[in-house]
Amino acid sequence: MPERLFLGRPAVSVGGRPADLPTAIAAPADADREAAAQRRVAGWFFALLAGAQVLLAVAVLPLLRRARRHAGPVGPAPVPRRVVAMVELLLVAAALAIPAALLADVVPWWRGDHAGWWFAAVTVLLVVGATAAVRFAPGHDSTLGPLGAVAGLATLVVAADVLTGARLQLNGVAGYSALEGGRFSGLGTVGLGVFVAGSLLCAGWLAQRAPRRWRPMVVVAAGGAAVVVVGSPYLGADSIGAIALTAGVSVAAAISTGGWLTVSRLLWAAMAGLAVTIGFAVVDLRRPATERGSLGRFLAALGDGTGGLTVHRSSTANFETLINSPLTVLALAGALLVWFALLQPWGGLMRLFGIYPAMRAAMAGTAVAAGIGGVLGGSALDVAGAAGALVVPMAALAALRVLDHSADRTQPGDGGPANGRLGLGGVGPAGGPAAPEGAPDRAARTSTGVATA
Image (cartoon, rainbow, N blue to C red; front, side):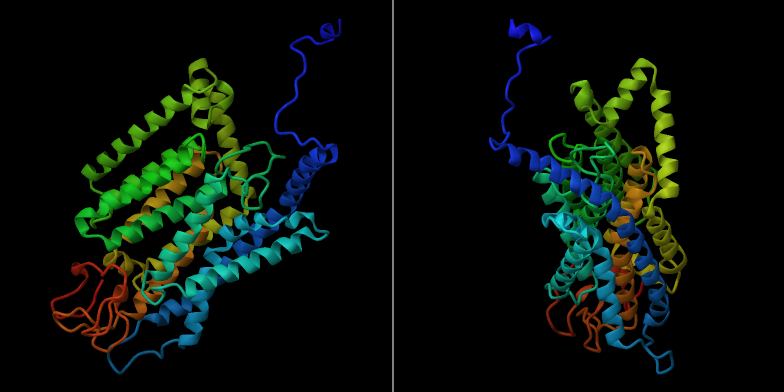
């Protein structure tokens, strides 16, 4: 008779529940407290980050103008070394702010009476520690040293979180909220942007150290591992992000040896992206309907005739995110700094791209992946903003160093700067060993021995 009270099978105990009732109640209560604190703190954190990066971009402009050293006796006085070193540290700290905010959830900052201040204190300590690690890391004095270290740290933080269950992103300031219900596991929008930028910059940094003919393979190997982390249903569980990252890796591999994105290279990149897209689509569609990702749900909606509603919801989400998210400011500010300053003849980035083509490929691939991931994922410029928060400060730092070495002269045959300073790419003094970083391409040097773009 008691079983008839249930209109299904009898109730059974779910495994994993603590035996003690207060302990069982405390866990979801603590998660709810964290989610509520996350909503309050995330807004001002990204607003402050956007404002800080805008101010830092303004401060970098006069340094870019005066960073190029003149070989002759006439020229503007160089910026004091201490000022340049301080700005470099600020650029590194700005690039590491989002990874530090993600890592801050290791400490239960939301349990205090002043959760926002506790989060700020923990994040600042993590930023200071990570900046110090980059500053004293081997190869810091080379042109691409800080860029490689920052990209490696950012990639490591996000990858470690994803590989351990993405516990830091759920209800995290740099993650996603359970109260919004958009995602409960895997890689979030901000994490995707940081991981895309970090993994592609790491791929470019590694490829630059390899011989020219091996660079596409290095980019594909490093980028392919990142695609698996993003797209695996047991890890990142973001098929749209995996497709976007595949497009970025394909573009980066195609131009990693130098030159332009020709028709043949574009076709190979498109074929690789299409193959990965079809693979993820097949895997997603074969999963149960309740476990499908955004790609599988969209394809299923196309099959039953409701694809138009899905496109409308995605367009609405893109528009609302575009006008309401502080990450939009980060994306636009970064784009303005790159276009109107870094890519100008005096900005240094074109010179960097000419000497280190693998880094140009990595940054181009990041732009492609972040744009596709944001639009198709319904998050507008959020992915690009998170990626730009990492890439733009590092691009500015590398540009400053390239301009600082623009007047270095090399002795014919030895590749070392005649004045004894660090040369491009960390080449050691004349007659000495090279620093542990890939030397710039030979095409970047003239027959007279002067390093040029």
